[in-house]
Length: 247
Image (tube, rainbow, N blue to C red):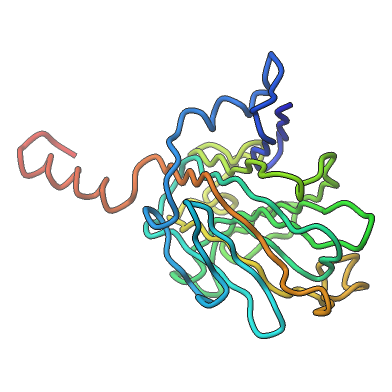
């Protein structure tokens, strides 16, 4: 059965057993082609904790390091999805993330849209947290938004598809009210797994326990479908100007 969350992101579980009518989230994903990891991404950190097998990426955290990856190109809007499978058991303190950011281009003054899975203890469900930060701020009242969901399905049993849908007018139900409260600058798509013991699980009550390492996150079915990559759009505009067809 396919599910859909109308908030900051599109969240959809596998559609192989989908019943009709499918949820609204069923359609956006099918409009975009999947790509392999190496077609659209590169390792960002922790290369020794990253492995690609048959277009599925596995990253893991142990007591020595975590790992992260980044898209090759930025975009300023579009559909950004991936299928993700999380680790069962004790994962407290561990964050598995999939997000948009321009932190490297604008350190300390960046925009970010997050999908974060907050690790948990035995017998408790994962918490999915979404965040929107604008120019380094996210107070949740005027600028940005933070929301948490206790997942009603088991994200460790199978791959489930998660996505951010970013248009010039909104990020799902986070509307563009002004240029100062909405991300307008290009962002890159990232994924990572890392130790956030200070806050991730019940406000830091439970920490990462490396007796249960490695902590693993798996990603596949990448769909980083920006409306147009920034460099390609600029090239197209330059080409039109050169041929006298306007901007």
